[in-house]
Length: 200
Image (cartoon, rainbow, N blue to C red; front, side, top):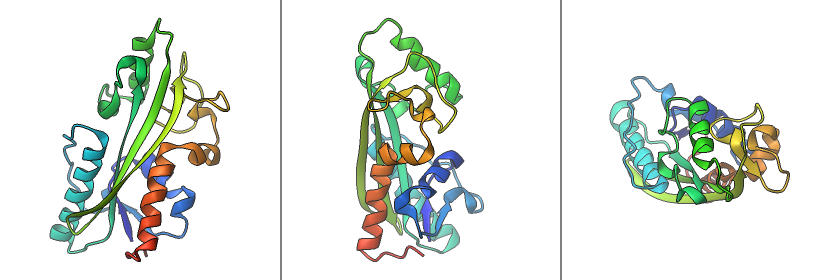
């Protein structure tokens, strides 16, 4: 069993659907009783991923008496003309995904440079100890307005440069093949297999 340290059901579904997750027994941290909130107070996405992985793996051992591999992720949208904003604060600049998207679009109004990057870090911890962390990134641009119905988060405004479509306009397979999340999680899952950590 691998525990995904996310309380976001959309993110957990997307991770479980990645090609690298095929054949793995994946469980969300929210499936465990009395799952606590973890304060993400790191100064960047990598620090937040590490904080969640370590603290949730320690909680599982102390509360439930188990020590499975725990993998967490923190990701962010970096808009270059906005000095990397929203970055580490991507999930917290507004209450809803729709509001977050429009905050970014409003701040970009009138700016010529709409280049951006999706960045994701995964971190693996076992028994309260950090094992390793990994980085995935993808370059793109910000659309003039939201487009598409797929995905979640900033997908409706993040354009894939090759196709010209937003991530929300791509089918799941195409998006997963391109995404920062796929890159970061594939490295984590490959590490588990290569080092023979329990994944079933």
